[in-house]
Image 1 (tube, rainbow, N blue to C red):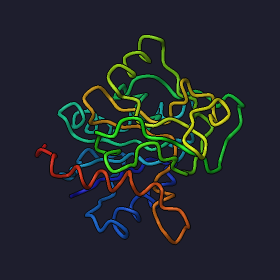
Image 2 (cartoon, rainbow, N blue to C red):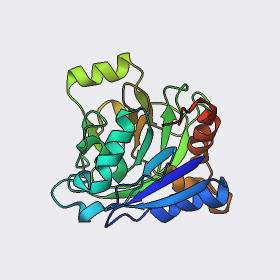
Image 3 (tube, rainbow, N blue to C red):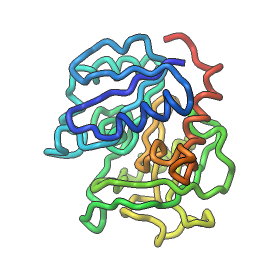
Length: 234
């Protein structure tokens, strides 16, 4: 399987993502510069975390207009798989590939710490190997992770099972106290209605190496590889 990791000016989690894909999962991986348009026949595109263009205006608002995003949007609209992590999630919302928006954290402060999330739908490319009701300890590092959507959009997300992860406590309970940023309905990750574009605020690539003492995030990447036999040639 061939992965492409897009790098924008200000990306700072691209190397972490490449490390997990290449060194831990032993997958072919290429770095895609934001000014290029060629996706190099990748099967799966990842938009990593960071501060694209310094997070000026809104997070992801400028990166959405990078030349490579034209190709990413076309790729996604044809059924190609795209995964945005943290800032990548923000870019996907700005590009209209995912519904809703990421607002400033409720506290108006940048938050960098471990939190817990729970998967809600286990039949997707990024969740199919995750255990039901298991609380995953995953780091967050964001100032604008407060997911918001209008009532109609939220209802559609629920009806279509597009909510993939919610913030929870260490026992898997969805509580107000376990919500680190004020996100509506404790939402930490979603997908589009065709289940090929995914966004997640926490950083699974930072919790995928046993050397770090936490590999709870690896289930996300292992799920992608298990789903590989369902991929069609794009």
